[in-house]
Image (cartoon, rainbow, N blue to C red):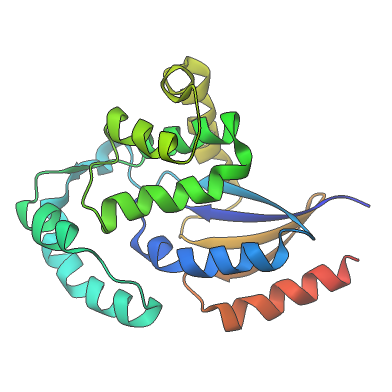
Length: 211
C-alpha cells in the first residue's frame, strides 16, 4: 500500500500560518506514528512582491487583531512595536524558504520544528529571517549542523525555487493548506486557518480509510 503522507503547505511570512502552527504541532503529535509528514514553502513573497514591511503597516494593523482573536496566538512586542512600527525590514520568502529547504536536506525530521522556529523568530522575537546569521542560529538551536555550507549550495536554491513551482502546479495559492497524499491521490483537509477540533476528525477519517 502506498505510504500515507500529510503535506503542510505554508510560507514563513504567512501570519495565518503562524496562527496555524499550534494546530499543526498538535496534529503532528497525534498522527506521526501513522503517517509521514512533509512541509512545503509556497513562495508567497518573491520577486516584485519583496518590499519593506512598512508598506503593509496599515493593512496589518487591520488584520492582526482578527488573526490573533481567531487563532489564539499573540504577536510579540518586538514585532509589533519594533519591526512593524519601524517599517524598514524587507519581507522576502526566498531566504527563509531556502533555509527550510536546507533543514529538510540535513535533518528532515526537524522540518516542522524549523518552520515554527522561523515564524516565532519573526512574529514573536522581531528577528530578520532573511539574514543568514539568524537562519543559521535557529538551525543550530535545533541541533542541525552544517547549515551554512548546505544553504549556500546552488542546488539548495534551485530546489527551493522548484518547490515554489511545485506548490503552484498543485493549484495552491493560499496558505496554510493541509493535504493528505496516498500515491498520486490527494485529499484537502483545510485551506486557510482551521481549529484542531475541525481538522483532526477529517485527518482521522482519512487515516482510517487508508488502513
